[in-house]
Image 1 (cartoon, rainbow, N blue to C red):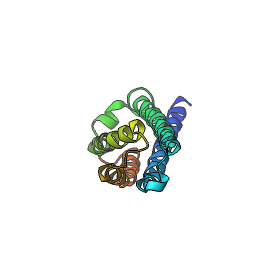
Image 2 (image 1 turned 90 degrees about the horizontal axis):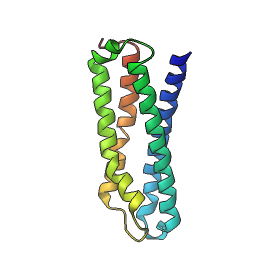
Image 3 (image 1 turned 60 degrees about the horizontal axis):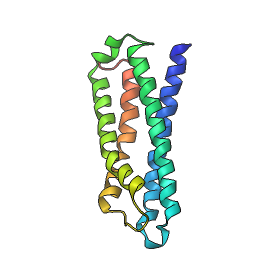
Length: 144
Protein backbone atom coordinates (compact mmCIF):
# COMPACT_ATOMS: atom_id res chain seq x y z
CA UNK A 1 0.00 0.00 0.00
CA UNK A 2 2.76 2.46 0.93
CA UNK A 3 4.74 1.47 -2.14
CA UNK A 4 1.73 2.16 -4.38
CA UNK A 5 1.32 5.59 -2.77
CA UNK A 6 4.93 6.56 -3.45
CA UNK A 7 4.76 5.15 -6.99
CA UNK A 8 1.69 7.31 -7.61
CA UNK A 9 3.42 10.39 -6.14
CA UNK A 10 6.49 9.76 -8.29
CA UNK A 11 4.39 9.31 -11.43
CA UNK A 12 2.13 12.30 -10.77
CA UNK A 13 5.15 14.49 -10.04
CA UNK A 14 6.88 13.39 -13.24
CA UNK A 15 3.74 13.98 -15.31
CA UNK A 16 3.27 17.42 -13.73
CA UNK A 17 6.89 18.32 -14.38
CA UNK A 18 6.68 17.25 -18.03
CA UNK A 19 3.40 19.11 -18.50
CA UNK A 20 4.82 22.29 -16.97
CA UNK A 21 7.94 22.13 -19.13
CA UNK A 22 5.95 21.60 -22.31
CA UNK A 23 3.61 24.48 -21.48
CA UNK A 24 6.54 26.75 -20.61
CA UNK A 25 8.32 25.90 -23.85
CA UNK A 26 5.26 26.48 -25.98
CA UNK A 27 4.32 29.68 -24.19
CA UNK A 28 7.89 30.98 -24.35
CA UNK A 29 7.52 31.45 -28.08
CA UNK A 30 4.68 33.90 -27.53
CA UNK A 31 6.92 36.17 -25.45
CA UNK A 32 9.37 36.45 -28.31
CA UNK A 33 7.13 38.98 -30.03
CA UNK A 34 6.93 42.56 -28.83
CA UNK A 35 3.13 42.63 -28.73
CA UNK A 36 2.87 39.69 -26.32
CA UNK A 37 5.34 40.97 -23.71
CA UNK A 38 3.50 42.42 -20.73
CA UNK A 39 3.70 42.03 -16.95
CA UNK A 40 0.81 39.55 -16.79
CA UNK A 41 2.59 37.16 -19.17
CA UNK A 42 5.68 37.06 -16.95
CA UNK A 43 3.48 36.57 -13.89
CA UNK A 44 1.92 33.58 -15.65
CA UNK A 45 5.40 32.20 -16.33
CA UNK A 46 6.22 32.49 -12.65
CA UNK A 47 3.13 30.42 -11.85
CA UNK A 48 4.02 27.80 -14.47
CA UNK A 49 7.56 27.45 -13.12
CA UNK A 50 6.31 27.35 -9.52
CA UNK A 51 3.96 24.52 -10.47
CA UNK A 52 6.77 22.76 -12.32
CA UNK A 53 9.14 23.14 -9.35
CA UNK A 54 6.53 21.73 -6.98
CA UNK A 55 5.96 18.77 -9.31
CA UNK A 56 9.70 18.21 -9.58
CA UNK A 57 10.10 18.14 -5.81
CA UNK A 58 7.16 15.73 -5.51
CA UNK A 59 8.64 13.43 -8.13
CA UNK A 60 12.09 13.51 -6.55
CA UNK A 61 10.71 12.81 -3.07
CA UNK A 62 8.63 9.90 -4.34
CA UNK A 63 11.58 8.53 -6.31
CA UNK A 64 13.95 8.76 -3.36
CA UNK A 65 11.43 6.98 -1.14
CA UNK A 66 11.05 4.22 -3.73
CA UNK A 67 14.81 3.89 -4.07
CA UNK A 68 15.82 3.99 -0.42
CA UNK A 69 12.83 3.06 1.77
CA UNK A 70 9.99 1.09 0.18
CA UNK A 71 9.64 -1.29 -2.73
CA UNK A 72 12.55 -3.15 -4.27
CA UNK A 73 15.83 -3.27 -2.37
CA UNK A 74 18.17 -0.31 -2.85
CA UNK A 75 20.74 -2.63 -4.44
CA UNK A 76 18.31 -3.25 -7.31
CA UNK A 77 18.60 0.41 -8.29
CA UNK A 78 22.09 1.20 -7.02
CA UNK A 79 23.74 -1.54 -9.09
CA UNK A 80 21.83 -0.76 -12.29
CA UNK A 81 23.68 1.30 -14.95
CA UNK A 82 20.39 2.13 -16.69
CA UNK A 83 19.15 3.69 -13.45
CA UNK A 84 22.34 5.74 -13.20
CA UNK A 85 21.84 6.91 -16.80
CA UNK A 86 18.30 7.97 -15.91
CA UNK A 87 19.52 9.86 -12.84
CA UNK A 88 22.22 11.54 -14.91
CA UNK A 89 19.72 12.67 -17.52
CA UNK A 90 17.38 14.01 -14.83
CA UNK A 91 20.28 16.05 -13.43
CA UNK A 92 21.12 17.30 -16.94
CA UNK A 93 17.44 18.22 -17.46
CA UNK A 94 17.35 20.21 -14.24
CA UNK A 95 20.67 21.91 -15.03
CA UNK A 96 19.49 22.88 -18.52
CA UNK A 97 16.29 24.43 -17.16
CA UNK A 98 17.80 26.49 -14.34
CA UNK A 99 18.76 29.47 -16.52
CA UNK A 100 15.42 29.73 -18.42
CA UNK A 101 13.47 29.52 -15.15
CA UNK A 102 15.72 32.09 -13.50
CA UNK A 103 15.51 34.47 -16.46
CA UNK A 104 11.74 34.23 -16.92
CA UNK A 105 10.96 34.46 -13.21
CA UNK A 106 13.19 37.44 -12.43
CA UNK A 107 12.85 39.29 -15.70
CA UNK A 108 11.01 42.54 -16.11
CA UNK A 109 8.49 42.57 -18.90
CA UNK A 110 10.49 45.07 -21.00
CA UNK A 111 13.38 42.62 -21.50
CA UNK A 112 13.25 40.52 -24.67
CA UNK A 113 13.78 36.79 -24.26
CA UNK A 114 17.26 35.89 -25.48
CA UNK A 115 17.55 33.03 -27.98
CA UNK A 116 19.58 31.08 -25.42
CA UNK A 117 16.54 30.72 -23.17
CA UNK A 118 14.38 29.38 -26.00
CA UNK A 119 17.15 27.02 -27.15
CA UNK A 120 17.63 25.61 -23.64
CA UNK A 121 13.89 25.10 -23.22
CA UNK A 122 13.67 23.26 -26.54
CA UNK A 123 16.73 21.13 -25.77
CA UNK A 124 14.96 19.78 -22.68
CA UNK A 125 12.08 18.30 -24.67
CA UNK A 126 13.93 15.23 -26.05
CA UNK A 127 14.94 14.37 -22.50
CA UNK A 128 11.23 14.16 -21.64
CA UNK A 129 11.05 11.20 -24.03
CA UNK A 130 14.30 9.48 -23.09
CA UNK A 131 13.90 9.63 -19.28
CA UNK A 132 10.53 7.77 -19.15
CA UNK A 133 11.88 5.15 -21.57
CA UNK A 134 14.83 4.55 -19.23
CA UNK A 135 12.46 4.48 -16.24
CA UNK A 136 10.42 1.77 -17.95
CA UNK A 137 13.56 -0.28 -18.58
CA UNK A 138 14.69 0.10 -14.97
CA UNK A 139 11.29 -0.98 -13.67
CA UNK A 140 11.47 -4.10 -15.84
CA UNK A 141 14.89 -5.00 -14.45
CA UNK A 142 16.98 -4.26 -17.55
CA UNK A 143 20.59 -3.67 -16.55
CA UNK A 144 20.37 -5.36 -13.15
